[in-house]
Image (cartoon, rainbow, N blue to C red; front, side):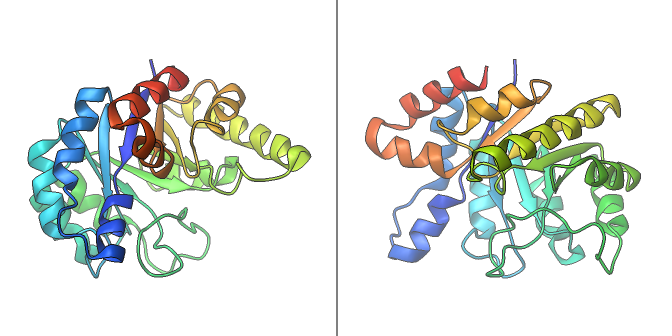
Length: 236
């Protein structure tokens, strides 16, 4: 059975946008656990906004399994090492300098992932990386010594039909290669109730699925428990 990770970043973003002090990220993590999510995820950046250090600490206490997503910057190692998440996912910072929601650019990076990988490895924290959904990106991140890969689907799901079909074929090839390399294979980015079935059909070897805003948006209508149970049926 594939595992399901719920990304909670939309809640701190809502808190910041509305100045709503009663947004309880840790409580959402507990409810997600009860509804069948295998893990919850928070994303941190160097400015620690909108996700704050206290969000990470409180969610770590509340969640059965916490994933922390962050840019591969040594300055954020302290946050990860103090929180002791069950896994860290390395990703590029978003274009607005906030949530890290883009794949790493493995061709033009000026610095190695080495310092961050060593620090997390010494602490026994498993590491994955968000990369573009193609064979070359899988090869490059495997060469860096990263044991898990999260193939970014955000640039695929809204493509027009023929382009999306070709992109899904490339995704399937990348998933098969990562599986052959014994990497833990995840997908995430733009996934929801409409887009997820097509992605899984294209790459049935996917082991982990990450969904965020789509699940939280549906929860506004039907509650988090029902939203996640419906999602669990799609994940398989």
